[in-house]
Length: 162
View 1 (cartoon, rainbow, N blue to C red):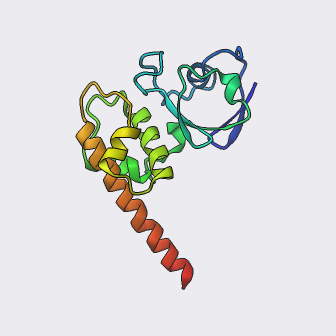
View 2 (cartoon, rainbow, N blue to C red; view 1 turned 90 degrees about the vertical axis):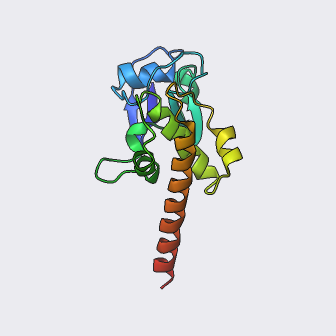
């Protein structure tokens, strides 16, 4: 089966019913996406499918074979982190860190749809579970990233208009 992952077509020799999570981790060695609960409750396995946050532990790989899949590996790099990753560090969000890749992917999907979310909108969108309880820091980091992205976007528009 061929999958478009992080902008690259990849072949996976997997049963079509295999959850996307296991194709990513076991077949393609993209281990940033984590297994948490296996029932789509915790969100540690969150990836984007055509821009939507999806729990990959219950998504059959065959259901997304013709869609664009994005994992945490494509969000940013150590040299050029995504504004959310920079905000996560600035707000000291991670404690154990296990849920963070799913949290970041859910937050990125939120900001792509709503660049200036309110606390209520963040709480509604961020249904991922964090055993460390850093929800207040997550909210602060999302606001920080939204502001950073808005400032960068405004600067780019001003530069392009000149």
